[in-house]
Length: 373
Image (cartoon, rainbow, N blue to C red; front, side):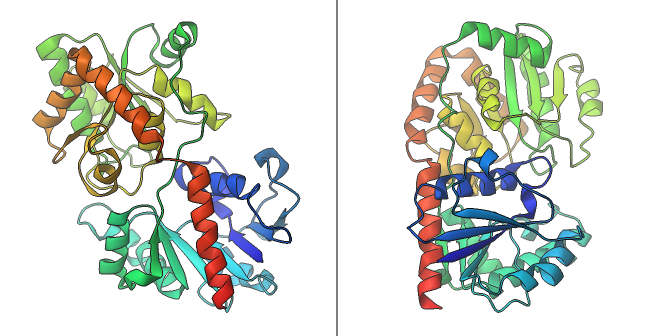
């Protein structure tokens, strides 16, 4: 079997979907059958050995580097003639290719009012829908996402497979006080506890509300914590203005979230007293899986994939609202029994969040498509 992967998201900083592609390829490497080949299509050179891939993988660089949609639709199809199945791991596929294909759809939050701009709904959302309809099969990251793809894109359920994502073994509890101290000093300027948010900052993830909840806890309980946003402000959220208005500007920190090696993030989770993800909507969150795997207590919302993964293993609120969010964070920080219970439950849940399982199940879907073609 010869699999092609449209991997333009491996270029530049690897965030959520870039990490997904990286881990899928890494964990495919030891489980490919003899004779299987994987061609990774990219617009810029890629070092497959740096990813730990075997000789079954090769890279094809397709030039010139254009916008992603033009590159994938006009250039990529010229190179897929000997491919048995083309895998689109980041929502999209070339719409004109005759090669059988599988696409990964990670969320359908564009259908929710106020989440994305009109431009996004007229462009990206349409590409995602057309790609899902073009594909022989769609893989999604949660049962809730499967239902959204079925309802919004009109894809029959039998053409969709839900496969949870995972956390790398590097994400585990750490017992290294010196490392934790150094991590806190580096990120928040002193050896002080912090509340952690990891990911791109956006209104959908209720960043302003989290700052307001943090300020409430400061006023009510005098907590010594900082609030750390570990991720780029791609949504142009006015978080500094919100922090200033709430009187916590000296306690809120933000970094672009770029690390030389992804496993370095494990210390960031371990040094936190609580990880908070108060999203209005979310597909499967890699940061949630990583925090649970590190044994960091989690506060999140019992909605969609967040609730599917975290309910019973984190402290979940029914909706992202200010008072419930502040109360939940406060319970973790002020009640040691709650904190210890959530640490244990997170580690328990981590047993179900494994990249080797994700990779195997995804490859099985691709093999099934290849066999039918």
